[in-house]
Image 1 (cartoon, rainbow, N blue to C red):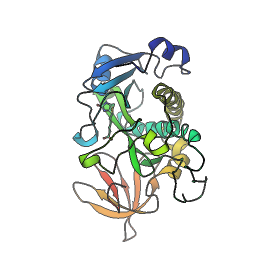
Image 2: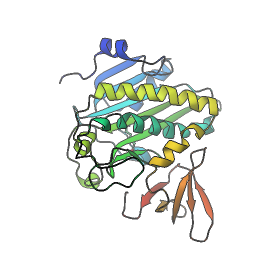
Image 3: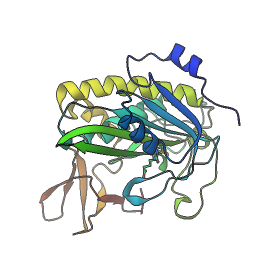
Length: 288
Ligand code: BTN
């Protein structure tokens, strides 16, 4: 199998100060999140990037697995060593969602005219949307289909963050999704009919994330991303089901707070602030 990343070429063309500067690229790993966590225990630095062509035990959120065949997708994990309090770490999933959505949209510019009929600021009139959507807290969708998921894992030492690993999977080239994923997942190339260079997509993400992380450190919350996030939030001002294992409920999603909670207005007028944790959110039609 041809390697899609070349270490020298990667280093020469990476426009970042720390994000992705140390690259660990493997043909096969169990999970890039697991490798990033063990590299952290060996002292790997902030911004170490672990990429695999294929994963044999890719992990998804809420105990799910993440199908990771070779040659078609991006599977990577970024190791971080934040100085801030552990309570803030869950916001990093939303910071990465912002970085990934923006990076993905950079390829929408190449979508052929005629395929894309979506005009900035208007509702899509059929055709393909050039905007990505963010399904709170960790999914990126294109044309109503999931193309990317994010899994953030943290290690705490004596009440402080030891490390955070943000793992991202992106479906890039055409592939079939069966079972649970049928009709729900898709790939960037399938939806936009554009060629995507995986190395370039990864470079865009590293560049965006470095800027976004620094903005997040400065503000201490998600304030810098709220405008963009709200313009991309799936089901904003629409009905959602919050699948809280304790007490599931329905309401209208109004946006997110600067701390990353989903704001849901219940029928009785009560406003709830939903913390990601083990909660999952569904639109009226099912997944979307
Ligand atoms: C989800 O949507 O449930 C999150 C999926 C995250 C998958 C990525 S692929 C790279 C990294 N390594 C893993 O084992 N999981 C994440």
